[in-house]
Length: 372
Figure 1 (cartoon, rainbow, N blue to C red):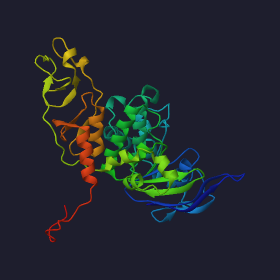
Figure 2 (figure 1 turned 90 degrees about the horizontal axis):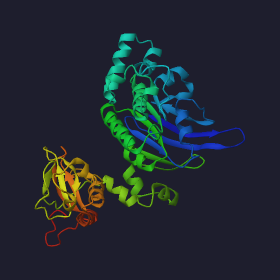
Figure 3 (figure 1 turned 30 degrees about the vertical axis):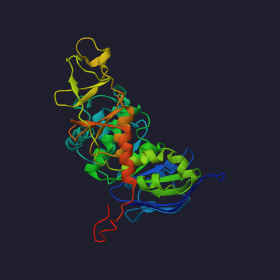
Figure 4 (figure 1 turned 135 degrees about the horizontal axis):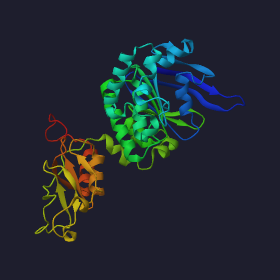
């Protein structure tokens, strides 16, 4: 557990980067620091491993005052991941991952075994083991950076905008991989980002900071979206926070319709719909086609892939987005294995949202019955 107790960082000249910050980052959870530029996010993070020293206040790690710990011991007990990964350019992937174990005195065999294990954990093929950072994509470099931070199995991870330097598609993949790893490992993580969507997706709790390093609100994502403490927080999390909050509402039973489907290689002869859904042999949706534009057999390059696919067990936001983004205006819903279970329209999802928002009402004719 990381505890900030009245922590302030004041620079010569009077500039205050962090002002009387008090918060707790619980064990095994992801605490995200978010806010506009100049709010002290990175300064707060770097005070934990004493790359920056607080002017006043205390930071404790599992009850130990970090100011009284030996710097080298403190830092070796924490994983640290930064933007652009910060890899050693003259070392291979395997050597980069093994940096901290070597500093701790591990032998070569144990270090290499741990590095290979972590490559698999973060989704890096063994073919990359002997490559150098310049031979990797941005997303691959970030995976190496995460693996290096985990190499000595530290209980704490400090992550400073680790995914901000890659494109949106890779960023989403890295976020998903990160959440999968955290589900397995249960680290205590302090994570800095300027992106409120990333904070909402990754954080167990979110600390919103104002310019000058003042804590505006600390809350779990659902509460933050539904109950911003003031106009600053409301503006920062976005005026579409009601839509974002749907990410935390499970999808109720929707009026799903069966959808006529086609396979690659079939023809659209006899299909009267404006749009037809194409699936693979396992009934996994591949995309939509416009039958009137198809001559001959359906080919993969004809597919419209713009619409998202939502899981029936997922949040309401996914179902609504699937309906709104679909070219047919019919949202594609799948089960947990990715197989099609049906389609739904946006107004039907909105009706489900309204139903979910209605308070339960007791039956006045039967006082002992449960509310409905």
